[in-house]
Length: 600
Image (cartoon, rainbow, N blue to C red; front, side, top):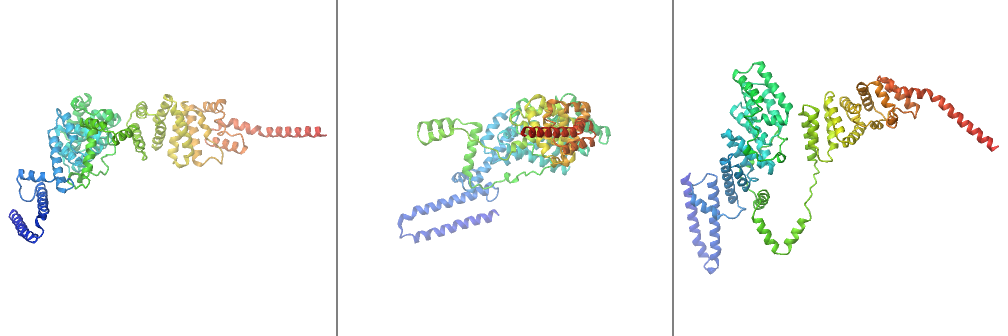
């Protein structure tokens, strides 16, 4: 192949020499005017050949070119829009990223991070992730270093941290299907340290442990033990309930005795590590604790069961027609992240020149641009965090603490109340914890009383949309808050108990609500509360006396649900109603007689 390519090069060179004299002969009449054009054509031909040779050399094919000659030819390529120039820049970026990843360690990571941001890691994000994963697979003992590096990059460019986490998850899934134990151990170690650094979410960790311990084998239990050792301390702080379930599963596997003795000893060693509070397995080394907790961006959308696009095309070279513009954009990003001393000099030079520059500065000082998020991504993320906080807590005090810490900004209380009621409705049976959380929130801040009042009105107005199980849980939730007087009883004014204003769903809701109140308070206390003059306006529509038809309907309803004792007042009112009608008629007749006498 080398000989044929050499012959072709010589033949092309011979054809060029044969054609050049012909052009000179045919161009005698034009004089010396065509000499510069001919020189430009030769230069352009040289640059084109140099580009072809540089591309061939970069791809590792073609004729061998000495390094000094290749460097000289590469220097001739200055047009950034050419494919050859971008290929050379891509190779230089790949070598720079690989070099920084290979030499990073605990001592120099603070110096490596600025150097890494100096490179265009937006264009080379696939190269960065691939280099980090290869280095971690080759040196698992330095996993915590690579995880810390990815965590720092994740704070500034979350898409890179998400890409790394997705690729590690997909690599673990491939290794798990192939029963590749060594690769599985390396992958779970990387995921554990990414979780310690706040890149991975606790949901991914719990899913992975569930997969490993659902059908335990010697290898899967061994991988799970190593995984818990690496991230056990962080998992205990994030989800104590989930940690307890995992160790109960380990205990069950140990008692069954179906695994090898060696693995049983590993489980016993894990329990011993748990007793020491994971002292030998810290969450973060002091030198690698580079990201504050508030700046961490966990990717809760990356799960073990989801389908993730790993974007393999980012690892290979692709021609970019907007190469110069993208490079300028990254220069601005780099200056924003690292800062640049040259900016001050440029600002001083611009200040000395009046004109359009000063007008641009004045426009920037008017105020920052406000961006409105119409996708409600923040609200969806808040609802997800509320759900995870409720599901991962052991007691209602812990839930309230997490929710108040999460919703400290004003304006989020209404969404918290709605999410709490929605979570309660999704349970198979009513759980008392939700009522205790609602009670504690109402007692802590009065603003939650107003939002629960609005939620009660909304839920009752749309109760026909719910299934029987959901409306039962909602009714018991509000009954729990009401019987403790943490909630205002005036919400009963929203209920109009008559044949026209009620549906089958609303009647079921009222039935369950009052039956639960009767069980919690007792029938006598509930009756006293219904007859309390302070709440006469609230119960006016629930125990109607305006129309005998509505009164009979209310009496029949409460009697049918076993709470007829609440309708004693209505029965007495219905009993005395004919006498009142007769008295009213007599008064009317007496008034008419007196009027007739006066006329006469």
